[in-house]
Length: 406
Ligand SMILES: Cc1ncc(COP(=O)(O)O)c(C=O)c1O
Image 1: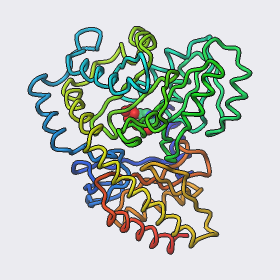
Image 2: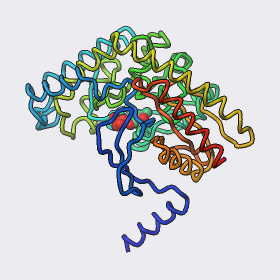
Image 3: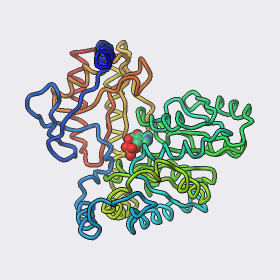
C-alpha cells in the first residue's frame, strides 16, 4: 500500500515535470566537471554554471594543503558532539576568528559554528521562535529558514518579497514580546538582496531583531567579503547573522554571529547543535586558512573579477532577451553572482536546461516548490574561476537554444 501510494505521488510529480534527477560527478568541482546524468550512458565534460563555490576556493591549493595538515594533526572524525568531547581547538579557533571578523559590525558578539547552514537556521528559529514570539518572514526565504520557522512555536507572518511597507504594518500590529524579522541576505534563487539598512531601522522602530541568512552574501559582498552587513556599513546591533562555509569558503559548515547572550542561549538549548556529532576538526582547521584568504587580497581580487563577470553576463543576457520581446522571458533583479533567467513554466526550464547540457553546460532549471509556480527559471551562478570567454560561450549556447525553443 505504502509503495503504491508513493509511486502514485511520484507519477504526479513526473506528469507536472517536477521529478528531480541526480548527477554523479566523476571529477572534482570547478568550472569544468565530468558529470553523469541519470539519462546518459557515459559521462560528459560540462562547463559548470551551477556551483556555489563563488571564489573558486574548493580547490585552492593552500586550503587543500591546510585540510591535509588538519587531518595529520587532528585525525578524522571528532568522535562526539561538541558538548561531550568533540569540540576541539580548531573549532574554537574558528569561532574566535569569525567573532573578531564581525566585531565592528555586530558589537558584543560571539560566534557558534555548525555542521551545515540548514542546522544553523533550525537552531536560530527553534530557539528564538518561542511561544511568545512573532516571526515576520520574507516570502522568498530559503527552505532551511522556512523549516526552522515551521518547527518554531512563534506566530508566523509572511510578507511579500522585500515589501518593507507591508512589514512595517505587520510589525505595528504585533503585541508579541519578541519580534523576529527573518530574511535571506542575498536571495538564493534570484540573487537580489535584502535592504538591511531599512530592516535595521524597522527593527529599532518596533523593538524587533533581524535574522539575516547570508549564505550567498558572505565572502562575495563587500570589500572585505563580510557580506550583506558590510556593504551597508552599519552597526548591526539588532542582527543575528547566519553564514555558511560550504559556498564562498569552499569547504563546509556554518556559523551564527550575534550578541553573546543570544549565542550562549543557542549553545545551551539548540537541538541541532547539541544532538549531533561535531564536524571534522580538519575542516575547521582548513577554514582558518580559507577565511584568511577570503578576507585578504586573494578574496578581494576574486570578488573584483566576479563583479566583472556579473556585469558582462547581465549585459549579454539583457541584450539577448531584448531580441525575444514576446517570449515572456526576464532576468532577475540580481546584484550578485546568482543570475536567473525566468522562463515561466517548468517544462520550459527543463527543456532549456537539457539543451544547455547537450551543448556542454550544466545550468539547472529551478522549478516549484523551490520557486513559486509560474516562475521556473534557469539559474546561472558564476565563480571567480570563470573567464569572460566561458561567459561568452554560455551566452552563445543561450542564443542557439532561444532560436530553437522559444
Ligand atoms: C540561503 C541558504 N541558506 C542556507 C543554506 C543551507 O546551507 P548548507 O548547505 O550549509 O546546509 C543554503 C544552501 O545550501 C542557502 O542557499
